[in-house]
Length: 87
Image (cartoon, rainbow, N blue to C red):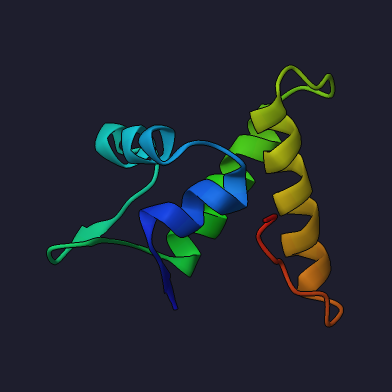
């Protein structure tokens, strides 16, 4: 499964432009075949790295979204909870 930039932005609760910056900077690996695609494993790796590297205090909306996504991702492996984008 692969995500588009728009899907990644939605999952992280950030703008599409910010998601593009993450890809451009190499923080999130993506393949470009005309449209950037971020594999689920690369996205999960980014979420894990961000959640682990942050200290316990929440500093921004993005940090909160990362913590929530990481929590849901780890919970998903043991239960049938699905990560759904906020609309």
